Image 1 (spheres, helix red, strand yellow):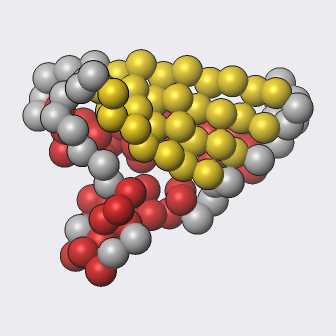
Image 2: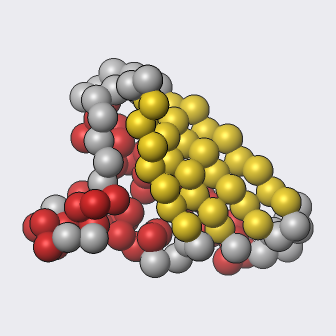
Amino acid sequence: RQNDLSAKQTMRFSLAIEEIMTVMADKSLDGRGSFDVRAFACEGRITLRIRCGGRQYNPIPLIRSDQDMEEDSLFGIRMIMDMVKDMLYISTFGVNSFFVEIE
């Protein structure tokens, strides 16, 4: 255990950051833009907030549809959605925001 997080939580934490940022860099940023990542840990739970400027792109509805099976780049997002407690996408003032809760 490190910082009161299990190895499983730590792996899910890093995988969520990597997969969300990879998809958003490819689909939203077109090589230009930035990310802001915040992590909060409280009582054994981790919450991530990942913000991304760039074009609005929400991969979550695609993952829940048949279109996802044709989109190889969404494999990582589909995988982490099965591992986390909750994942939410919000676009506010042109900023893509993901909130991920890990138990």
